[in-house]
Image (tube, rainbow, N blue to C red; front, side, top):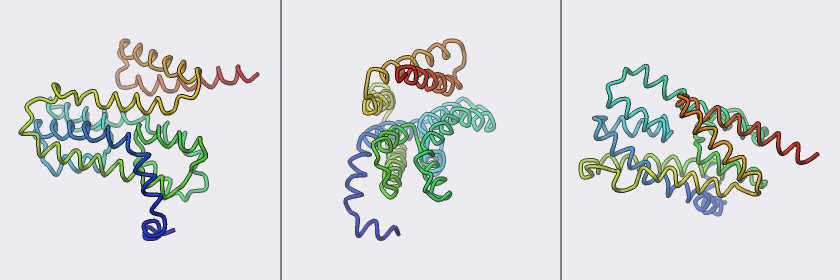
Length: 235
């Protein structure tokens, strides 16, 4: 199926993709704008800001990178930190790969490149419900990515007019978006219990000093714990 065919013969795919991506879009607009404002204030150029949103496309990693850039941290340290922060994407794409076995390798690579925490949550729900529409999956990722780039661009342009983003509450937008996406995936009490357990483990790891690795380790422990409890309940 060509891109032109998708546009001309399957407009419902686009409408459905926009509808499903709406929670992500609403979260990306304020968070992306906040990143653009911060990038402007730390001295990044508009080109570098847009390129980072295009190539890196990872909200938490970009915000960390900008903060490290402002602090004068060496480039290699910024790259290494960004790499560690984004290691969780390996776990997410590995989990989704089980539903993409019929896809070509280049399609899987392109799909994995644009996976974020938010799109992973959305696609996990879609695939679990039997919705594995390939064009729609790419549309959702594309809508999310374009939204992030545009939000970063607009944030940078308005950076000089916003002295401080904290009073606007933009720093909470990312957390609110995660809560909304988590609520979409909760189906029973076990899901709530595992989510709470994983969150507590992550907090404990942060307090113990494992800042960069806390999410990855907590995710592995939470998933293992949830799988073990689910297997025990089925016996």
